[in-house]
Image (cartoon, rainbow, N blue to C red; front, side, top):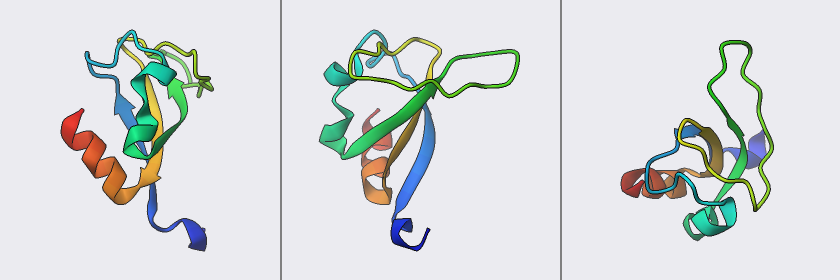
Length: 79
């Protein structure tokens, strides 16, 4: 998409500092990021689960993050 060239979508494995928090408490928006959904370990085909504000981040969950390139880099640098 021509209008979205500065955005990235990346998978991110939850780190201990975020495990157990809800999306609201994790406050990814302070990094100018949004969560598209999450995956849990699965032996079959991975399924993207949608996450609301009350979704609690699990220890083996992979979140699908979207944001501008520099916002992603800032977040990954501190997470």
